[in-house]
Length: 478
Image (tube, rainbow, N blue to C red):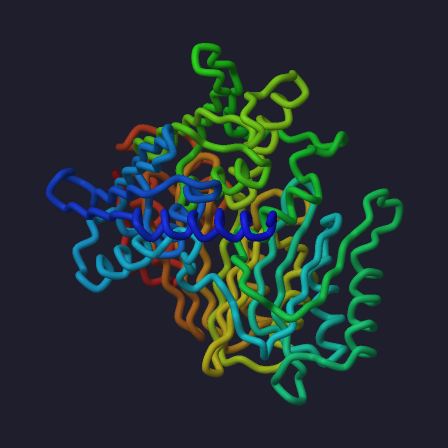
């Protein structure tokens, strides 16, 4: 009798969802600068995350958002652009957005981030970050004849997490031998287990199911408690501002976050709130220039607001960590070349030998080509010296290397440099330049100089580049 009642309740819930399937309205005439997407549907736990996840995986930039889910109904309005800041006018993309969002929430499949192939073996790692760790992991996988097909690695607050898809180098398929799987797990654990580290690393090997890599990495970093900052860390960087306060009139807790804007920021925040078992009942997101303002009215899944100072502090720290994980400062290296077995191991070894530490990495291979993205600093977390770039170039040979300097806590992409074979090309963009040929330019470009000073710096830089036989593709000052 009880089982039948449960089945009836489940069938009724499914019927309600079908009768109230998501309604999506996309408008390009409502807002001057963005495409407006409105999503209305029956509310259930996780709906907001799945909608935001679908938008993020379509590489849409959310400039504004209004969220409400009181009364069992989910209503959301998003103002979105492409990554160039333009409205979405391509009919194919608009149809793709509508199709993704109109699918029942529990059926939403992310575009391009869920790896379903059973021909890969999934390796998940968490441990204490240290210089050379990624290189050692890649070397172990190569020595064990594991070919890395795709991978994403995050490092934050002295913790590191990785989601890696590998195949057997000899067969090109998933690794099935229990002995080999056990050996891989044992050796990776030994690499992750640092001397004197009181935290136990984790190594998981399985056949990949339906996973969202970004969300899985958030979960792994949260489980590794990366929101706890090392006691010995002397960090003077500007952190996101997060406040957690009470709203006694409605029994809500109000979370307000202010930070530098960046892609996928809303997804990262909502993902963390969801994983912490909080429900968002109302929310507002607004971006202006490079700053983002997020405001959420939340309760725990048990229906109660934040009830203690310790819980309040934990929410604040976890939101800060969620914002920072994908906002690493450093040199952005993008490598594009023919793929071959051991390429990733060789690349990470070269980075390690030149004193570079990856803070984030995204590895992908397709149709015999490899595209590797790294955000790196030196071993102390400081900016990379320009001469190091040329040393890397010489060691990597005839590889297409694209270098971009990011200062995520103050500016967006500032300098973009391409090295294609022996031809060198440099592109400038945004307000100020960083990492010029000499330390004088480096310091001057980071100062908040007046526009005419920046223009003079630009002219001087162009003269220097001309003397060094560099070709300038574009130079823009504001």
